[in-house]
Image (cartoon, rainbow, N blue to C red; front, top):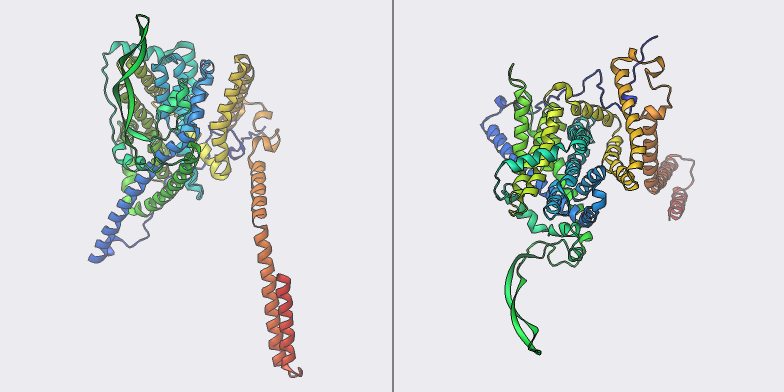
Length: 615
């Protein structure tokens, strides 16, 4: 019996397969301009000036890109912050580890900031609303939710198939690392309390003093972002803590400088059976200085301001990203591109080649610590992966380093907590740090275990052939799957186990069969060596692609129907005019025509009829 192998292009679960042809070779960015040696002095000076100007514009675009991400986070907090606070308030649901994980994902998606969602968790733990054990799965969920930003950034490069393949794989390698880490470490944490116990030993073993979280890149970006919007992030924490006053407060900060003043207030009393008055000191919050951002005096609700900022920030974000990609393509050509690619993607000589990846992890952690956001760093390297400057093998350790960098910022922020809350706040931050370190130990040191790279490449191949599948992936992984798990958790653990376990077992069996079909088809029965026994729609994206193409074509047809009708009418009018002109020429040239005036009158009548019909 001949071995039949399943084609990766027809498999919806080909995330562990690789094509025989490698489409991942970095493209050669050729220099189509005049060589440097062929330029005269004026041309060389002009090229240097243009290069310096491009570099300055690139820095400005990067600045606007980072600021737009910050404004985007504020917009999501205005739109979904209250819902996030309400979700965190459901303590009975949070006690379920899977529900806590999903809530961490959904809340981070709502506020688009793992720092905000993790700070809410830290404040709830510090105030005693949540225990550290309950908060551990939520912290894992925030790690997953923050990786959606660079995946959305990769969607803006869908115009070119090869660029989109690399960009989407470079973004989703971060997703797969986070999901695989959760699949291993969450059951381990539930069974043994590994993260909780290790971080508890660290807290007890070291004498840690309070400190302050540093402001690095925020010193530069806050100049612009705080001139646009400033938020009172304590409102979300207050809603999560059950504060009734916080529910009626606006998240838009009005007063930037306040102070507690002690005033003497007269209160009534009863002394020796007679009424009396006595003075008591009372602390009153007084407003000193108003904020100066654009929306400080607006009467719009938080939702309206959030939607305005959401639209504007997305417009600026996409515009900056497109300009950055175009500018990098024009700058990174010829010898410059070869030098940069060689520096970023070349390993150290044998036997120290293995050190290169760990240096990339350190670089990723350091850069993320500087920008204080893993979303900003990973979103910045995504277009570089797309245009072929950074390989996906190098982007993977950089993304792992960004996961570590964002936890160090949280650790420093936790150390700014008061002394009585320092232990719990720091323990949660260390849980986040240890979770990422454990994930790196699982999925990086041994090359065979670097499954996220292979899975991201396979998904990149699928999305390059079927670009609509990228949107399906984002919706399924970040919305449908978390909401499904959350709904099953609400129904009880019996329903969750009864529905979830068969689905997980079936998924594992399908993946194992898929791998054997690709690598060892002889180990399988003849009927399982391909998926041809299933309907085509069950093992191929081609039928679904035809449905999507037909649907989009129908929508485009409906949108262009009126325009097409007008175009057809105009085309008919033009043909009529041309025919009338030809008739007139023929009449003038034909001597048999008695009077030229009659021909002209007939043509005018025909043209008038056409005009009336058009009206």
